[in-house]
Each structure stands twice: as structure tokens, then as C-alpha cells.
Image (cartoon, rainbow, N blue to C red; front, side):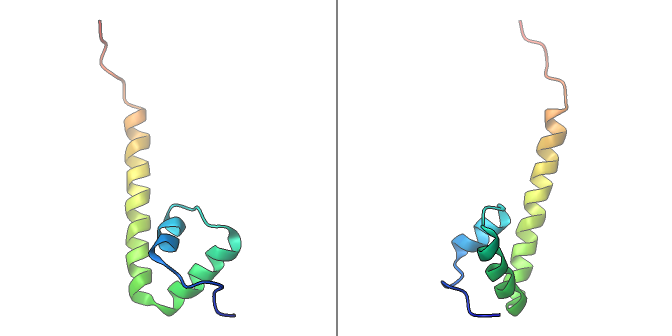
Length: 69
């Protein structure tokens, strides 16, 4: 694998967690993460937090709202 076209920045990691990268950049970020286990652990934690929030929001949307008059 070649070096990334640009250095991997925090913005790239955030975009990776938010699933906002194009395929080529995602591959570059994943290669970077495989070479940097400490960063990868932090990103995995962010992914878990993202998924927990999505799950909590999905559950709360299914709850009935109190009636208002």
C-alpha cells in the first residue's frame, strides 16, 4: 500500500467515525489505523459511542409522547 495522499488528520478520523469519507480516503484511514493501534483503539471507542447514541435515539423515537392540550 502506498502512503496516503495527505496526512491523516483528526478531521479524517472524525469523518471516518461519521461514515463521511469516500472509499479511497476510508482505505487510507484504515491503513493508518492498522499501523497506529492506540489511535485505532480511540476510534473504536468513538464508533461504539456513536452506535450507542444511535441506538438510544432509535429507542426514544419509539416511545409515546405525553398528550398535550
